[in-house]
Image (cartoon, rainbow, N blue to C red):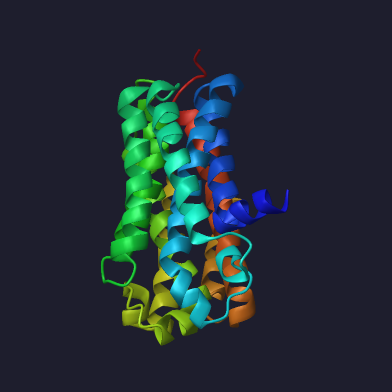
Length: 268
């Protein structure tokens, strides 16, 4: 049991679980619960791979900063064991995404999302192109679900997903800004600086909120989202990430609601 917990922790279980739940909620709006479980499971496996490759790549840097909360640093699992898990899970994830309810086209888009996450971990994280994988992956996930029911994804869905993805990247970097900068990880947010990155994160979340509000009006979420995102500009570091995640969760709730009402009916 402890080993399983270590593997889940190495996958960055919080974000992995969140993406899986959002996928399930979207899938139940467009499909029904049966296929939604399988679709969400395929996305979950992909998120495991993205998280595991991230921990593998960051292993030496995590050792440098003594991040004993990471299973590899704590010695709970070995790098060779994590590599073996990746090679076991990857083909299963590919099969479930392509041969499952998503179908070949949407399944291929889902697999592209996995590739984008891995490309961030190994190539784009320390570069000015660091937001690209997040932006595309978050934009492609909801559009893949719409494509799976043979509908054309609306532009607002693509843009809202992309803005949420880019804001997630900036928020994540802000959380570990000092440590990443010390390690020479010159991602775009670090190159721009802490204050500009705060401003950009807030602006991205406000833009996503406005786009989603235009698709599915909800004045309460609009007002709370804009106020909270604005407050995050001045918030101390210990509460900053929580405020940003609150806005993101409000936007996700609006996105799920809009997808169900505006895009499609449940199908078998």
